[in-house]
Image (cartoon, rainbow, N blue to C red; front, side):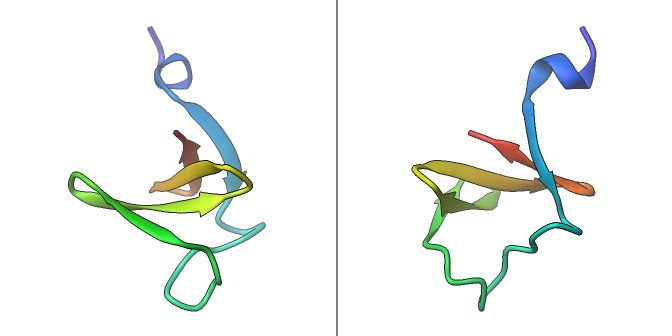
Length: 52
């Protein structure tokens, strides 16, 4: 199984960067923060966001 199979990638950090001023609601998720984006959650993973 590849890392591509383990999670769904969303857009790269170059397309949109989540952070304190991005305007998206945040949710603590274990050891990281998810960002609520169009009814789903994004979590930073290297140079892209995983979709939860």
